[in-house]
Length: 439
Ligand SMILES: Nc1nc2c(ncn2[C@@H]2O[C@H](COP(=O)(O)OP(=O)(O)OP(=O)(O)O)[C@@H](O)[C@H]2O)c(=O)[nH]1
Image (cartoon, rainbow, N blue to C red):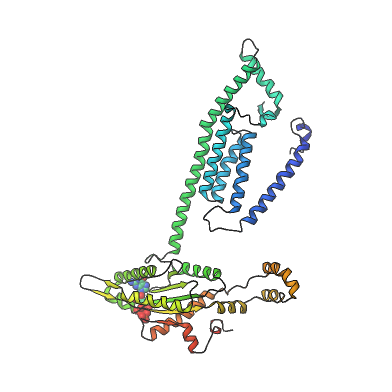
């Protein structure tokens, strides 16, 4: 538009300066976009600001400061940038940081306002060009034209029609001061209020999101994770577990639970489930995934736990539940027992499954890595980046649970109130991991 009207605007816009300016802004924008893309891949669990967020906030704050200093804190441009930036920041980055930056920017505005009265002469675009409403259409006037109009207005206001330079600048300074103060009282609180309202709105949305998620992921009765969420977390653990780590899965089922319901009623049955859930929570670490898998069945996933340790943990759980006394009333109390089926997927087995389940593309990629040593040293870094990492099959969770379930079935068959390991069952049958995937 400016380029198109360059003949008309030539007096007010330095077209020669505009091209490099546009180019500079575009290149800088693309660079920041690229930088954000690169840095956003390195997450930090949302505890602090990510590097890319700092890279976002710092230039933006400088940008706002420059706008405020150059164009003026009261301009539409500065207002939209300030409030819009804070709102966008609250959506994109941690809200408390966006809030702090916004308040810092407000502080900058206040500083810009009082600076002339502290003897600091800041550069202002007003000295170069201004937007002046004339004949209902905004038009650009240069500084001299504006000064001429202002002088004429000032002169007509005084009978003598003459003003010396000192009283003129004093007049300007005091009118500016009045104008600035008006903005401080009217515009800034408004901006703070809008951003505060927006923040409150986001907080309300956050709370309702948390509540929805809680209900979607939690078992209403025991307050443990529900089956769906337990499985989701199990999948995540299987993905993130390191190459040398084993992972163990326990299925725990209460014995003769139907009889508890029949003898003492569903309410007592419910209480048993709640108390068993509490025992599980108290006995296991925070890293353990405990979910209610079915009616009186619990799924426990122990990340980075080998078979022997998992057996000890399972046995301790069995004992803790058996020791727990459920008091119905002063005269009636009873104990429940549980049967547990355990399966440990060792890191070796996991790697075998990964290898067996590689897609043809992945196999081809890994075969192409069998290359002379000299070339390998140069290309290994690159190849590592390009080779798609072998994934575990998508139904791995179900298969592991199925193995634990077989052991649980065995425990029930052998008289209940015991722990059975599927790994030991397989070893006794001289079977191995092939059972898992039949390969
Ligand atoms: N109170 C209560 N009972 C439940 C709940 N969910 C499932 N049940 C009951 O749990 C009982 C499970 O019975 P079964 O599957 O026969 O198992 P069991 O009696 O524990 O026998 P084994 O598992 O073979 O030792 C059923 O009677 C269900 O009604 C629940 O949320 N609350």
